[in-house]
Image 1 (cartoon, rainbow, N blue to C red):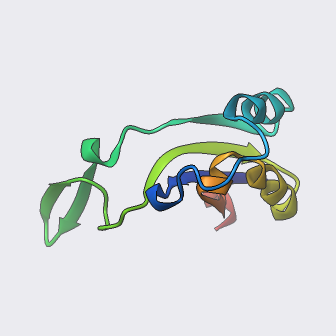
Image 2: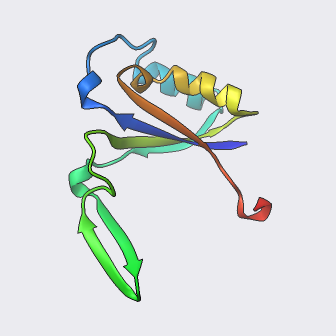
Length: 112
């Protein structure tokens, strides 16, 4: 089962708690163990564009879709047996300590 793991920065929590592992250790464990299949950092919100199509017109605005002090900094695609395994892996990510990790199960179109 695939999960999208969004890595969210929360500037108000930076440096408040020591993570259980370094990012390199997490990458080595997760990608080396075959539980993560893809992922990357994302450029900051200042480089983002939001696109909306309304009444036949396309509206493009700068920045993320919502006003917030938190922002999505990266993502990983996990391939796990179930949500419990995905939670265990995500909870070891260093940003779970100083940011937020959001897990979303994939919903393949052929299973809609």
